Structures are given as C-alpha cells and as structure tokens.
Amino acid sequence: MGYTLHAWNEGCKLLEIECDSQAVIHMLTHDVVDSHPLFSLINGCKEFLGKDWLYHLSHEYREQNRAADHLAAAYFA
Image 1 (cartoon, one colour):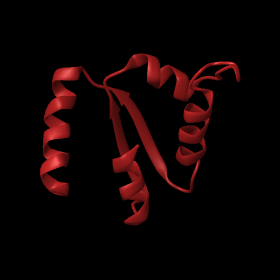
Image 2 (cartoon, one colour):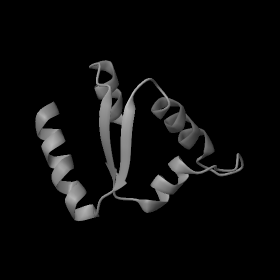
Image 3 (tube, one colour):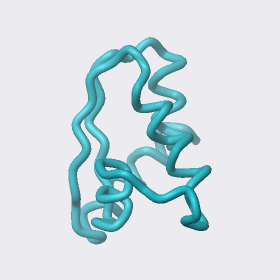
Image 4 (cartoon, one colour):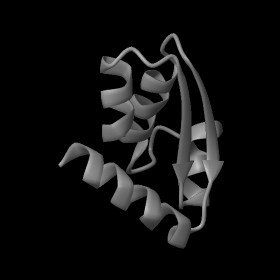
C-alpha cells in the first residue's frame, strides 16, 4: 500500500492496483472475521481504499509483478 499512499498524496483519483496474491484480493473484497490475525491490517487497507477515488484491484502473476516493482523502485530511487 506504500505506492497507493504516494498516489493519494499526489492527488491521483484513478488507480490500478495489481497484486500477486489472490488471497489478499479476496480479503480486500470480502468480509474478514475480526478474529483473523491480519484483521486490523486488512481493515485499514479497506478504509484507505474507501477514500474518494476510483480503483481497480486485479491479480497479476508474480513474474509480472516483479517487473512492476522494479519500475516503481527505479522511479522512487
């Protein structure tokens, strides 16, 4: 969510979020019981995604996500 926070601070209102974990996508798009060990983190992410912007959350295979991570790291370097 670090890049997402940067996007929010820069005033972006349309965001494409790619994740290499289908389990994370499922937890972000469905209810999670409050006894789940990651409930606070997931709930915080859901609250952040509920801000005044449009986003699309999609699954990307890990190999594709590595390339995106490399490009993002180069941008922030």
